[in-house]
Length: 278
Image 1: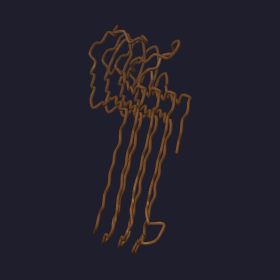
Image 2: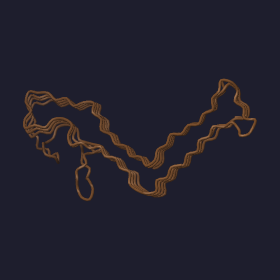
Image 3: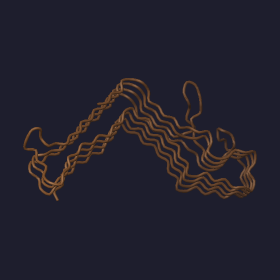
Image 4: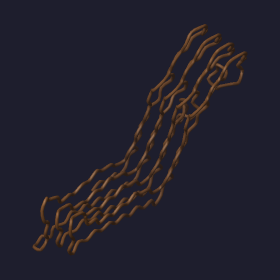
């Protein structure tokens, strides 16, 4: 049993810049790839497993019976859960770029927030199963508190930072004769209040009085779930606000296979119950 009575749970992974900043970029090359920025905020997390396993017979004729049972109970009474991840710039910032090559690829940004998360597994495995059982009971209750996940450029402000779009690519007042490639970058914000994976399994060559039970109960009484992803890809002006003041001449820009998403959910569960006789 896990109980969170009050207090905020926050995680922040923010960087100002991943890449280069200079007055001019001429005839050179900059590669920014395979970087990972992630933040995870979880009010309560649990991984529970109960297993009965034998090469021969498993019999429950006596007392106590032969059972594998997992009971998980989580309660979040009060307090926000928030995760933020991002960068101001991923790439290069310069006043003037000429005959330069910039590659920004394979960078990942992830923000995950959850009030309560649980993985529950109960299994019985034997040759012959006689009067045995396996069961999972999962109960998650969220009384109050917002759950949020943000992938963006978090700019300091009062009373709280403000999300702006991350820029992935080139920021320059003028650019000529260059090559810009932006590919395979990913960003995901996921906010889930109650999250559970429940699995019950019995397996054997023969069954006699075998039972499997799975119960999942998830409740959100008050509180919002919100997810936000903000990103710009390509070429723009040098200013922090991203004003389109760039002068571009003879540049080649390729933007491909970038994936950005936001997902918010109050309750999410994956339930599986399998009775298998070989």
